[in-house]
Length: 273
Length: 273
Image (cartoon, rainbow over all chains, first blue to last red; front, side, top):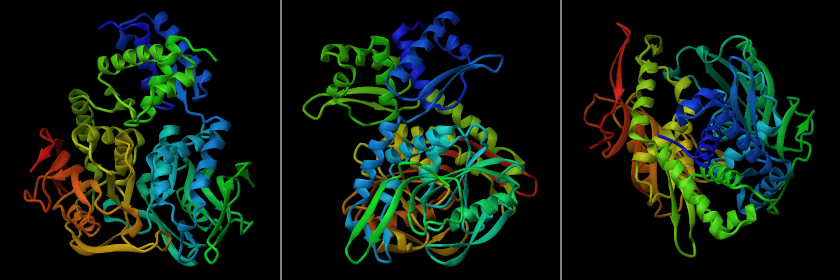
């Protein structure tokens, strides 16, 4: 089958865009399109242009034997701001306040559209060049963690809260979750993580940082190094968290069950320490 | 900013491909590219061609006031077969057999690449034209359920195994999970699901069908109708399951802890009843 230039370009965009951070060799495309290397190289230049002009991320060429082309998702600062403001506007709704001062959020954080945007934002602000895994804890952070793993082209690990026969022998730790103030367990199968791995932790919500601290402790049990942490929302109090150097996208300043008021805003700095 | 035809086509492919089943109006593109309607219409024809020629799914035009263009992901029968054979080959590895005859699968089912392919396969074989939600139960089915929701452009709901203060008042049922033979609880927040909704259930594994049956019962409590069910793997014994009319992608015929043998193969029919 022969392809026109416009068709080849459309196809290259589709393939790269569906597989962020995956390297495709030139021959992958020359075979698929039955076209010369020089032709495909020109196509890729056009594709690079499309992504740059529309601020959709970067397409980069890697030289050498293991070389090829890959797409790196990046959300522009402006799109990011628009998106986070929209989310904050949706959160700021007194009917979301639950008994105990909790926030009903699952309609937002389980949404494939929202979680995939969050994943791309984490991929834009957390350095994952050396990361081996994305690690999250069940349950609410899983959608955004999976989409982060997808954007970074990394495998995902999910820490469970109790040991599962269907996952084999495991390493367990106990931790105190700040929001509930009770001792809980975290567990991950022994074979899930290679020794000496570098990981990025993702979770949906942080108050005191107890859960993230527990995840970090569990990673230490695996001799894994935590090289990045991302949360969607963190509360501004307590100011002192149990973990440092995290990326938090949204600040929750106040949630008042009595008056039905919520104060949330995009975190302008992202990186706090 | 002005765009060349090749650039417009690349951009349209990127936008449609990132947002399966979402309708974009022609004006969305004419404004973005500062181009005439006739120009964009021609671009879209080329885009349609790309998807068809490469068997990447369908791009359809919707007429009328609410009209526009949308991308429907579809995996071709051939790609599907290749993919499922690869997965079966990976599963067929005696080191995956855990004590109790369980299968270690999380490296596969948590993978963003694999789960997004599974999502596209479910979207190719389950009719979701009338569906309102994708529903799964924590934890292992979540990645594939999220990717199914993404491919179908539907919201995702995750049934929890115990009531969470952070999710508000809930409806609960008890059920017997076949593989464990113990009574367990399923719970979903009351406000998560609108009365009279139509839902598709997704899970990773089915033996007797107890979990899917429980999910179905819980949906009945919400006066929701189950219009489709998909599982990645089902065991061939017991032959009689507690649920009917499900799509299962892979058959697990045998798992022998003593001899270390596993027998798995792609389910050639998909639809069983």
